Amino acid sequence: MDIKKKVSEIIRRLKNEYPEPKTTLRFKTPLELLVSTILSAQTTDVHVNRVTENLFKKYRSVRDYAETPLATFQKDISSINFYRNKAKNIQGSAKMIIRRFNSKVPKTMEELLSLPGVARKTANIILSNAYGINEGIAVDTHVKRLAERLGLTKNEDPVKIEKDLMAITPREEWGNLTHLLILHGRNICQAKKPDHKECVLHDICPSWGI
Image (cartoon, rainbow, N blue to C red):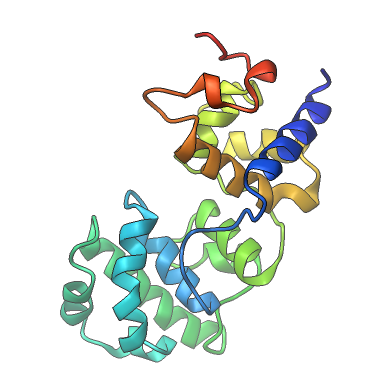
């Protein structure tokens, strides 16, 4: 099967399994999504949502993040992995958003990448989910694992994997592909023990039976 047709078939089948592919992070504004995404690195979305449920009631504007004493903000997110560094990045981003972007989370890749703690994965998540802009494909551990197992890439580096996926996936599906692979990775194609018998992709997956 041609690789582009294969990706289209993967997307079609996974959409049948997960009809509403979207991030599981809970947010109402681009700022909330920025904060949640930075917090989510090496932390489950479930735990992030538990923390932000109260956090977003206390921190309602970009100035709240920028002007709160760092020690106070660190305490508010202290149950999150690497909370000290994440607090510094979120506060640094808030200050830059005020200073350079008129207190609004920017909506271009270049501008987002200038924010502390924001790499391509985070920027892609914000652009796609907050603004509906498909600038790239967010590659997390699930996307990386499934892309390799499905034979969509031979690379290990997330940036190179993203380029491989962008070249074979229709642009309008870039955001969906991320969510579909993440959902399938969590539910079926898990790291230690993929459930091949329950996988709707088994007949087009090179990893079947391995």
